[in-house]
Length: 467
Image (cartoon, rainbow, N blue to C red; front, top):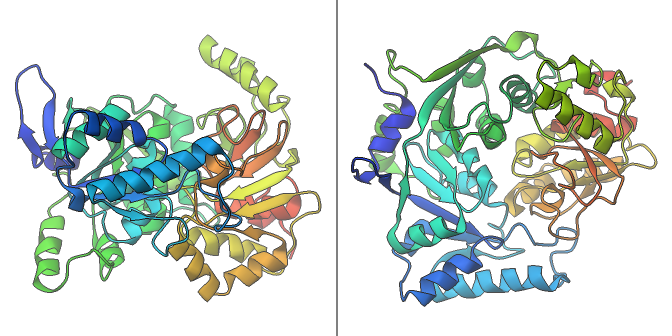
C-alpha cells in the first residue's frame, strides 16, 4: 500500500513514537505574533528554560498594529502592551523579529512564504489557526495553542496524535471570473465546517494543479474553516518557481538537491485515504456567504436560502439564527443585498495577486457613494510592490484606502472594525457574529467580487459592472 503526502512528511519528523501516546514531531519553523505569545514566554521564563532553536523561530507584529498610520502610537493599552512584550521577549531570547514599519513586517502567514521560509516537506507551527496557509508548499503547517508554543520554544518538538488522511480532488477548469476563494467556499459549503475534522486534507486534481501559489495559499488558508488542523498541496514546478531566489531559499547545489527531494513529496498512486471528496470545477460561479459561518455560502447568482429547505434540524436552527443576525429574508437575491463597507485584506487574500485582481476591477471606476472601501496588504513588501506597479494610484482614484500591513478588520483587534449593524463584503476567512466588530455583518467574497461590490454598492461580480 502506498503512502500519502501527509504521512511522508509526518513520518520524516517523528522523534519519538510509543504505543498509546502522541508522536513527538520535530518542528522546522516556529512563527510567532504578538497576540498569543506573552504567556508562553512567561511560562518559559518561570521554568528556567531557554529557546531551543531561536534560529528556527521568527516573530512579527500583525494583529494589534495600526494600519492607517504606522507611526501612530497604539492607543489601546492592552494591545500596546502585547506588542511591547513581543519586542522584549524576542530580544531577550535572541529571536529575529519584524517590527511595525519594517520592510519585512506583515501578517505572519504572508511573510513566511514571501521570505522563502516555508518550504516543501517542512513542519511549521504558529499560535494561529490559519498557519494552514503554508501547507500550499507541501508542508505540514498547523496552528497551536499557548501551551504548545511553550513546548516548541523549549524543545523544538511538538507532541501530536496522528491525524487521518482526507483528499479533496478538484478536476476541470475554473471558469473565467471564478477564483480560488470561490472554490474553497464551494468546498466548505458542501462538506461543512466539520467536514475535515480529525483529518489532514490534501488538495489535488487538475484544477488545483493549475492554480498559482498565491491561489493555493488561499485554498489551504481556509482549510481550518472546514474543521481540519492542516491542509496541503503537493509541490510541483509552480512551487519551485515561486521559491527560487526568495531570501531564505537554498541556492546553487543546495537548490538542486532540495528540488530533487521536494519532487518526491507527493502521495503514491496507490495511497489510500480515509475519506475522499471529488469536485468538478467547471461548473463553479462566484460564491458569497449569507450566514454566520463559511459553510453558509451560495453562488452569487442565487438567493438567500430558506431555513426550512435544510434537511437537518440543527442546520435549520442555525440558518434561522444566522438570518436573524444578518437581517436577511429567505428568497432575497444575493445581488440585491446592499453593503456599507468593503474590506480587501487578511491572510486569505492580501497578496500582490489579490491586489492586482482588485485593481483590474477598480481601474477607471469609482466606489459607490456611501460605501467605505479599505484595502490592507498582507505585508509591507506587498504594499511596496503595489506602489511600484502603480496600483496605489488606481486605488486612490477609485476611492479605496490603501493602508499598511496588518490583520486589520479581519480580526478587529485594532482600531479597524465595523460599527454595529454595518454590512460588509470582505475577503477575510470568517463571518462569525461580531468577527469584524460588535454587531457587524460579514459576507465573505473574493477580491474581485469585493471590488465589484464596492463599485456597485451591493453584492456583485465584475461581470455585473457596465463598462
